Image (cartoon, rainbow, N blue to C red):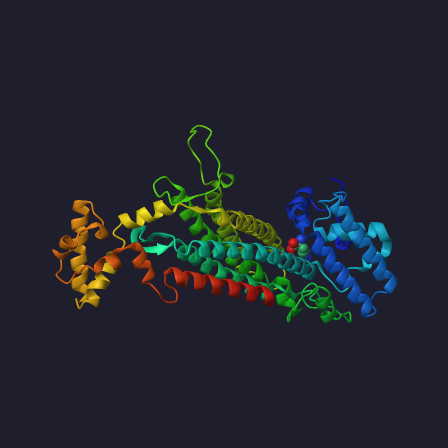
Length: 467
Ligand code: ARG
């Protein structure tokens, strides 16, 4: 194939790149997604170069105008992406030179694609983190409001997926919210390490031009320039951190999804999800499937996969830049898209969850969920806890045989197991009494759930104000 060598680096080559190799090494089909950040970074770089006298103001203006026009061409879908030009950076630079002539070739002064791409990804990640944060806040708000509304709704709490003790539905939803509050902290912490500027590191060692990295960093809204040029072009920790955040978040969403799937089943029958979040079956007319939570649960796998890809991509890489790093983009893009979609799905769906209160209540009543309350009652009357445990165990065995919940037994029936039991036992055997008695910070009592919802609301608002 009589293809010219790449115009950006062809000078030292005596034969053209093999056609397959050109295709194999090109990244433009996926990294064109970085075009807005690439242009933003180039405009800041040119502005800084003019400020320190490496470019004239006219050259800077020509470059800026050209890049802004290119941005328009890309947005209108008129830009002709070329695989022989390898990547987003060289595509844009070549088009700039086509438009403004020799001045376009001056843009790359004091810069390399190595610090350029590192900058582009960081700008991209910062933008995406900010969008993701908005969805995460919306979801947390939805959960807090749902929890507040359902502070008195009683359901069975589970350990080993066996009915354990009654809890309030609001308390359960606030447990989800706590998981997301930690994810939110992790996201904001990751953003700090994303928002550092590699430009100026050039290929690996820095540049001989009198650049001012503080100016470029400020123009791009970075907190500071990176400290070490070798590290700046090779570091992808921030991508690994983001996918770690994403993996933990999706792990949490998968747990919530699993519970939603269980709860919508006829066997649990705890909640209803509006039809718009469900689909039907092409063969079984009665089916209403909880596809949205199922899909979120399923998508967790690909995000874990991206974390493994990135960790393995970076393992054992010598300093500084290596072409391996080109493989960081697709996992990162997909992780970002998946997180965004899953958060949106949840933020839309959670406020629409309809608890079936009577059914939840009945399930809590059926499972001897106040057995611990009976034991605690006996302890308060002077029985040792181990003995109380045994007495209640016998009462439950009797209840299983006679098909009665503890609260349905007569005082005489209960007295067969302990004389200590009096009429006042029925106050603790009700579900309402059981949840109300767990009246301390972090407990399931309705007034505690309302107070916890209020604290969560305040913490979230404080975060918003601080951001
Ligand atoms: N397309 C490359 C990447 O994504 C850009 C940097 C390439 N640098 C180089 N010297 N080949 O990582």
